[in-house]
Amino acid sequence: MNIHEYQGKEILSSFGVRIQRGIVAQDAKEAVEAAKKLTEQTGTGWHVIKAQVHAGGRGKGGGVKLAKNLQEVEKIAGEIIGMNLITPQTSAEGKKVHQVLVAEDVYYPGDNEPEEYYMSVLLNRGTGKNMIMYSTEGGMDIETVAEQTPHLIFTEEIDPATGIMPFQARRIAFNLGLSGTAFKEMTKFVMSLYEAFDKSDSSLFEINPVLKTSDDKIMAVDAKVTIDDNALFRHKDYAEMRDIREESPVEVEAREVGLNYVDLDGNVGCMVNGAGLAMATMDLIKQAGGEPANFLDVGGTADAKRVEEAFRLILKDEKVKAILVNIFGGIVRCDRVAQGIVDAYKNMGDAIKVPIIVRLQGTNADVAKELIDNSGLAVESAVEFQEAADKVQKVLA
Image (cartoon, rainbow, N blue to C red):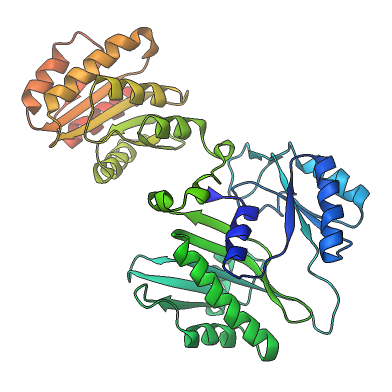
C-alpha cells in the first residue's frame, strides 16, 4: 500500500526521525491558514507547496513550488490543487491532485551550505536481507545516478534477525563524507529510519532528499513509503491512510470482491488461478503478439459468481480485444470451473462482445473441455499452451 508524503513523514516522526514539518490543505484558503500556523510554529517566512499524489518526480511536473509570501501560497496552491500532474511515474493522463502539503522552508542561510543525499531502505531479495541504499547525489533520479555514476551509490546490508548495528550507521555517515555534528546527526537519523522501516512492516522507505541543513541538522525533506499489505492487520492506523482516489477504480473494486487484480495497458484480458501461472500466461500472450491487459488471479474457488465478477472487471477495459482463461484444476475441479464460465457467460448475455479462449488443465480437464465445446457459446477451448497461444494470435489478427 502506497501512502502520501505527509503520511510517510508522520510515521518517520513517530520513530524520532527529524522531518520537514508541514500541514495538509485541501484548498487554497486552507493552504494559507496552514502557512500561517507554520510561521507561528517554526518561524519560517517562505513555504514549499507540494502536490500529494502517489508518484515521484513531482517537481519536474510542476507539483512542487516555493512560495515567498501568503499571496503566493494561495496562488500556487490554487494552481496545483485540481491539476492533472504528469510525472515520469504517472500515465500520460497524469494524476489529479486533491491536496497539497504546505511545508516549512528548510534551506535557510547559515554557516554551511545545505547538502542533499539519497537514502532508501528495502529488501534485497537476492540475499534475503534488508538493505540501505544511499548516495551523495540526493535530489536526482537514483536511476540516472546508477547509470552515469554508479560508484556514487553505496549499500549496507542488514540482517533482519539482528537489526542495524551502530557501526553500520557510522559507516554510512562516513561514506557520505560527514564529520562532527552532522556525522552524529546522520548516525542517529539512519538508526531511526531503519527502525521506522522495520517496525512499520514497510517494503520501501525512500527519502530523496535527506538534507543536511546549513546548521548541520539531518532531516527527511521527502518520504516515499510502501507498506506491506499483508501486515496491515497489525497496523490498523496505517490501514486508514489508504487513499483510494490514488488507486485504479477497477483494482479497488476487485479488492472489495476478493480478487487479485492489477491493471495493465494491453489488449488481452487474463483470468488465471495462481500468481506463477498468471506470469506464464502473460508471457504466452506476449509470444502470441498480444499485450496482457491485466493480472487477475481468481484463486482456488473459480465458481460462476467469481468468474462473472472477473469477466466484468476485465471488460471494463475498452482496450481488451480477447480474454484468455488459463486455469489449473488442482484444488478446484476443471469441470466446476467450466460450468462456472458457462453460467457466467449466460448471465452476462450481450455484455461479452470479445472472443474468449479457455484452457483448463488438471482434475476432470476432459469433462471440462466437453462442457465448453458443447455449450453453444462463443468460447473456444484449448488443451496445450501453444494451442492457446495460436488461438490468441488468430483472434488478434
